[in-house]
Amino acid sequence: MSKVSADIVEADIREKQAVKKEFVLGLATGNSPTGLYKHLAKAFNGGRIDSSRIRSFNLDEYVGLPGENAQQRALNCESYGYFMISEFFGLLQKKFIETNVPWGTLVEQADLVDAIEKNGDQYEMQGADKGKAVVIKKNAAGILKMIRQDILEAYEKRSNRLAGLTCRLSVSAEEVTLRFMKAAFPSKAIRCSW
Image (cartoon, rainbow, N blue to C red; front, side):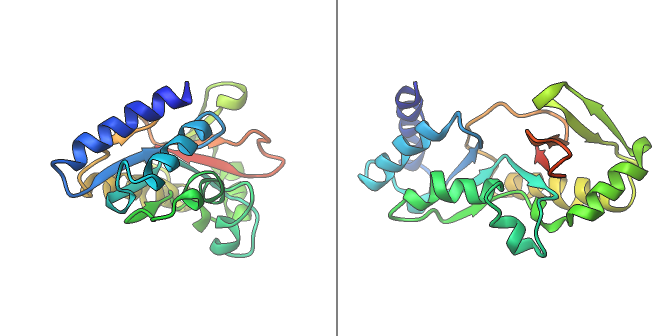
């Protein structure tokens, strides 16, 4: 299935690169697309499509990972930035023009946990089990407002400003959300998606 998916994406990239300077690719994370990414890396490395004309936007990242600073959080083995380097970006011989991952690593874990515990009226819980999400309300204040505006909405505006996503490799939520990671609050990290 991943080979079939990669063939479809490769054909779309090839077609668009014939008429456009850049191709903007939205990338899902998690284990499901890893086979697809390995096939795409082979296509890029084999010269069938040009990776130097790709700009990518990851569709999610954890907010509140442990670490003393944003760099440590970005390189945490549970971060999607780290995951994408291991599973896709690091496989490319010729790198993309630019890779983007939501800026969830800017948020300190303790600040996030404190905001969630103290501001129950500023968000809603939706979904169940692994699909639980914190949907931040528009009237949120403090760090929750910052996450909504400066991380999620700003990231979406940036991707749209750069010609929008030409190809998005997942179906994403229509609302700005924060998704709990598998371990939920014991690790105190939340996945931000848009």
